[in-house]
Length: 326
Image 1 (spheres, rainbow, N blue to C red):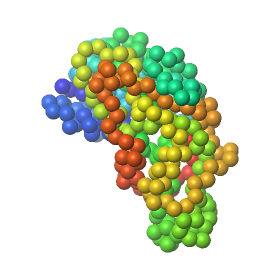
Image 2: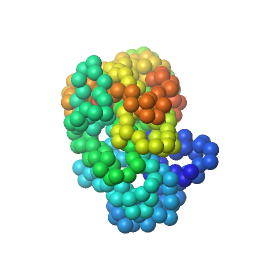
Image 3: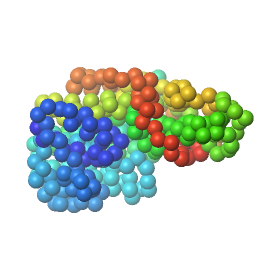
Image 4: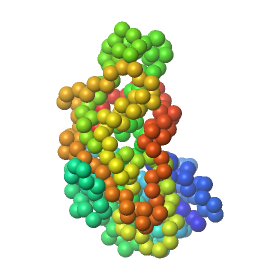
């Protein structure tokens, strides 16, 4: 089986690629802008004709689209998240119409949830911001393509290599810096992201509002869902939720990550530092029943295992002074 992964250099794309490489009797192809890519692809700028020529040479049995933008201006988000899937579908119809397409969507497409309720795939989407809106546009393009395609609406992924654009990644960077400062000075001291203190245990980790609830899912479990979606025979539902099926307060995730890091200071939620999306979407939780029924998939990793993997992959880089909930 020939599987082409687009966006393999990204966070989830890396986990997906690692998972698919281990599949027996599978030839994995990597598509992207890098000169090292097997297939040169830029979904933000390629024309359908250019992309179709590249896909015809690759002759994939399945295509996994992990390419996406989580930040940036409106042009970037629209080019990558909305135009990209539309161009990909047009090219696949021309060059590989029988290939299975697995596209990574986002739970942000649903918008604000109802506290205490898991959202199903039949819910009418109502994204609260531009990111969710552009991801929804990509999902709609895939759904209208007529291809053998499925969109995996992913919750909030956690795991090794989480980028600093995500809350787990940003908090990990802050904690790694605190660890480095304490190792160098015997204590975390001074201002900036960590407040001030006179010795170990007196540091402050200043964050934004952490009151929102999110459905956190291990990046390895996302990769497992992608594998099943790529190889499961027969037609699949057009959209499947991929999450943990449980909502957790963001402050609980931060507290548990701080425990994993051995952080002994205080976690302070600074007034006015929260994101607009956190205020608009205070609850997010996905019903994952359909993925279990269609793919036989269910999450295998606990949040603690996810946080252990995240902390083990840390690098002591400079992080923003304040971070807000996703």
